[in-house]
Amino acid sequence: MTTDTTSTTSGSAAGERADLLDTLHKHRDLFRHTVTGLTDEQAASRPTVSELCLGGLIKHVAATEQEWARFVVEGPAEQPEIDWANIDWTNPPPEVAAYRDGFRMVDGETLEGLLAAYDDAAAATDDLVRTADLDARQPLPPAPWFEPGSTWSARRVFLHLVAEIAQHAGHADILRESIDGQKSMG
Image (cartoon, rainbow, N blue to C red; front, side):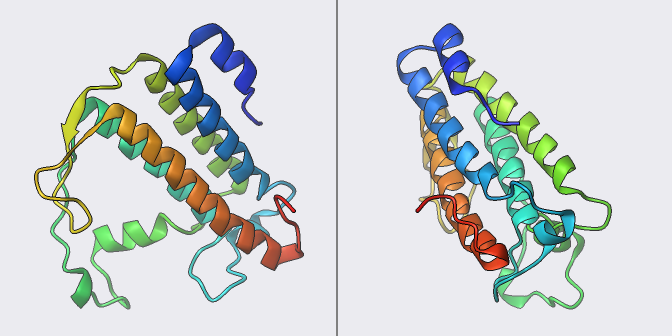
């Protein structure tokens, strides 16, 4: 199921919010297109040297939307202390194994189920775009990639989600083309 951006923006959002929603929908639709017609086995396959698979990317982007939506409402979540440089990848700690599983399809997961979860996460994000104070700020959690003491507005979070979805849509294009030659564009 793809999102109908016309009806979403015409009745319930205007101006900046409509632009954010339209852009999110465009990139989500391109991203979702990369898995059209695939079997669960194809979606779980790793056709390149990367650890990534298409189903795992769908799962990751859904989780990313959920995490950033939660951030907009509640602020930063507590992060576990993980020494990423010294992990035994043959027997990683549970939080690292769960993180790794967030990028792949595990036993019992289906592409249909992952897409349904993605649709739910996207709908919740869309609701937040329509209602959140776009200027409200939250402190970013400590991380090597964030400037200490930095904050992001809800607006900045939604722009980050556009970039995140677009980046992973590019990854998905490469994976899909490696599976059966299908291209999203071109």
